[in-house]
Length: 280
Image (cartoon, rainbow, N blue to C red; front, side, top):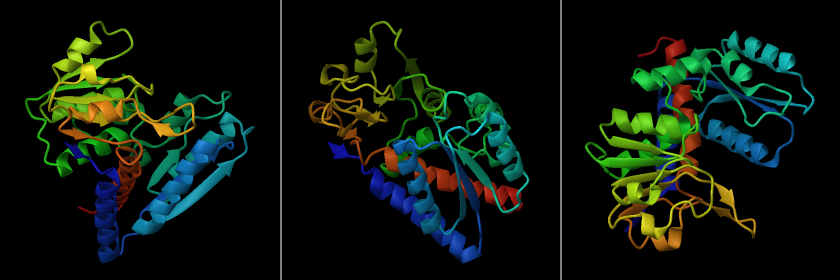
């Protein structure tokens, strides 16, 4: 059994990005918007700023009050859409309830949508002709690539059908020639479906969603879930201690998929910069 080290892989990806930026004198710019004072969101935003600094990017943070109106937020995004120093725009989710997340996401210019959340970029992921990969699913694919796990022809089960992880994860695996089953809360016989899988990706956000009796010997298990247990500690969807005895490869939580999300965000921002500056 091999424990997949997301910290190691993400560090290599950031090192490669930093080297390319320094060698070529690039100045990619990322604007991060946070509305309100959600503690988890603040941690994510701080980590993104640190990654920008490490990779040699120009970064701007816009910390807006909880009572910021939707029109004020969209006006800021529209200004950043026109800012030549900004190549990527990220609005940290979740937003306060009085703001329509969909409207905000759609306000970001597709050329600067480094999260790949807007409908245009989602559609491109569907057909396989995309510039920006959705950060978390693309991070999973980077992990598989780094560990030379070939998905072509393999049976892959994705648990969870969110627009951010589950659906795009299924698409990226499909583009890599896996045979994909996308499961969710209404799926019948989930245990039997998982038992036939060569690769399981769980992204449901529920502790204990994947138990050892759902995993066949030698399967690859990717845990995207981030939950807090009764003691307040981070825990994934997978029963890690039991499943690792059966899996050939497995991601821990924390330290597995999580670090990859920000590394791919940096990768997407560099792509946006090169596209905007028409650099091959």
